Every structure is written in structure tokens, then in C-alpha cells.
Image (cartoon, rainbow, N blue to C red):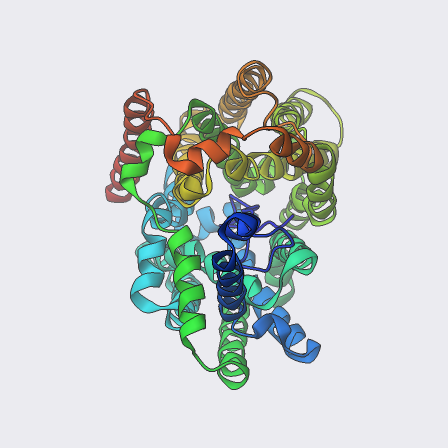
Length: 526
């Protein structure tokens, strides 16, 4: 089982690279009936698979390890930069002279562009190609973070917002580049392993950002050096991108087979509006949970450092170190949860567990005297369970022809939630008499309750209508597919029906997206 991470907020996209399957193609299975035609079909299928790999998966392990290192480090700077601002929220507000609502806009400047970027991400790669696209992506990330770091010299809020927007455009696409690289060089179980490693490295970079950026500022004597360190990491990621491009040109010159593979990869990620009418009800429940939980995860990680400082009286360094614990468990648990998912299923249970864990973490932090590290660990459990259960459900619910569209909406929905919650939480803090987090935490608790409710509804639908489709193990799904035609196969065969309620679901989705842009513009112009 293989997963990948779209962005910080949405960590586990299942990918199925073009590879030789042990199962024979349909035309091969009918070779007895078709005679020579069947064997010709099998030969053609084998040739296509060989061409699609471009021989990258068959390269010596030294080349593959080099490609793996380059792919893993390609986004380290991006993931690190995602959490530098949150760790220094109090300092940024003081140095720039901004309120909490303006800080919320500053944070949402990354997610706001990603409310639409996943929709046009496929067009971006189609227009520029994978290699030029990766260069443009890493240049945007690097230049954006250089602007952010440079803005600290004059406390220029417009420059920092501009830099964050450039960074947001690049960070929304860099994961697609990583997926492409890994799916070209690895296959089968090795692909599952490197995808899990990619998730671990990305979450580790996020953890280190929260844990180290304040100590760097304290050690150097100026908070701006923390942002320059982040910018330098982005530069290093750009260098590794150049190294990978040089490696790719050296071992595998472009060929027609490679062109076919890249077109296939990009086609799976292209958003198509006409497909929205065929999305089932269960999918929109997953979108709703991703909007609620994904947006809440991102927003909480943006404010948890200052929250710990205000609620428990910690200094900046201690608060940032404690807040970083919120990202510890995914580093270790995600690979194992992926294995458990294949073996036991239980996706809806993971979704509900994630919502409950989020709710419990907020209650522990706000209404008990337990050390904040306890609440952060419980939150970390939510951050581990949710992405695995949520995004891995999309390829289960949707036929292959709709997975790219479905993932585009999932990514957009996550960032719509993050944008709205960042701005709303900043406003709630500003209207609080003590500029505290009481109203913010109550708001977060309400969102968590809605997420749990959506998970329970999805569980009931899965048990009563979808014949435990989401909660099956991989083995159970295969056995049932052998007994009778699976509903997904019927959908793939063209029997998927339009759902009239999609007009309502789509209208709500667009309304939320427009609202996020209106709020962003309103507070930017204030």
C-alpha cells in the first residue's frame, strides 16, 4: 500500500504507479477464446509496462538511493517553513505591530492560494513539464521564503504576505513532483516503503521547525535568523532538485515511453469539472471531515505555541518545544497505520478516532490542570489517525477515473478550512477581553464535534448501504471481488450514475471557497 502527502494539511495520497501486475490483463484472461489475438494483447501490455518505467525502476541501487535522497530532501525546506511562523507568533505580532486577525491573514496567505491550486495543479505540470515544473516549484518556495526572511529587516507586512503567497504556490505543487519521482524509480512494496519514508521525513521537518526556530533566534540574538535558516533550507532543497535533474538526464534520456508515463501521471491529477456530478454522497462526507479536521489541524498548529505560553505561562522557547510534541506521533505511527489499514481496514473507525482524539486534546488543554504535553500528544494521535483513514478512503469510494478529481477537491477543501479557521480564530482572539484563547478553543471544540458526527454518519452509511466498503481489509476486498462484480468495477465500466445532490454539495463548497477569499481580502485591506 502506498501513500503520498499533497501538502502539509493533507498527508496520505494513495498512488498506484504503472507497473507489471501479477494479475493478467482482461484481454489476456480471454486468450482462450480469442486465440492468437489474446497473446498479442499480452505482449502489447508487457511492452507498454516496460516503456512506462523508462528503465528507472531497474537502475542500480546507487542511482535509486541518490534519487530517493533527492526526492526526500526536495520538500524539507517547504515543510520546515510551514511551521516557523507559528512557533514565533508572539514575536511576529510584537515586531510587526499587528493584531491576531492580521496574523491569521498572514498564516492563511499560504492556504488561500491552495484553495484553487490543486484544481489547476495538473494544468501546471501539463504546461511546464515535470522537470521545468520542479524547478519553478522550488524557485517559488525559495524566493518566497527569502522574501519572508528579508521582510523581518524592516518589519514589512506586505513583503511577508507576498513571500508567503509565493511559497504557498510552490508548496502546493512540490508534493506532486515528489510523487512523480518516487513512482518512477520504485515499484511494488519498495514504493510503499519509500512513500512511508517520505511522510516520516516531511513530518519530522515540521516537528523540527517548531522545536528549533525559537532556540535559533535566541542563540543568534535576533528573531529574523530563524526565518533565514528556513530560507537556507529551501535553497538546499533547490540544489538537490538540480542534482536529481542531472541524475535523470544522465541515466535515462527522454524517450516516447517516458513521455507516456508522465502524461499518465499528470492525467490522474487533472481536475475535471464535468466529473463532479458523479461523486457519491459518501465522498462528500469525507470531504466534510477533511475540511473540518484538516483545517483544524493546520490552524491549531499555527497557534498552539502561543496558546501554551498564555495558558501555562511558559517562555517562548519552552512553549515552542512543548507545542512541537503535537507532531511527534505521525513520524512513528503513519507507516504502521498504513500496514494496519491494509491488514484490518477500519477506515471509518480511524476517522472517528481522529475526531474524538482532537476533541479530547482540546478538553484536556483547556479544562484540566494536566501538563500541556499530554494534550499535545493526544492531538498528535489525531494527526496520525485522521490522514490515514480519510485520504486512503478516496480510492476506495471512487473509481479510478474520478480519483484525480476527488483528490483535487480534498486538497482544496483542506485549505479552505485552514484559511477560514485561521482568520476566524484570529478575530475571536481579538474580540476576547484578555486577547486570550477561550473563544478560540470553544470554536475548535465545536468543529471537532461536527467532525465526530460526520464520521459516525459515514460509519452508518458504510455499514448499511456500502456493505462495509471502507472498513474492509485488503484481503476481504479481493475475496469479495472474486465472488461478484464490485460496485467500483461497475462504476469504472461506465455505470456510475449522476447524483443530483452534487449541485447542492458543489454549491456549498464554492460558497465556502468564495467566503475564504472575501475574508482574506477584507483583512488584507484593513
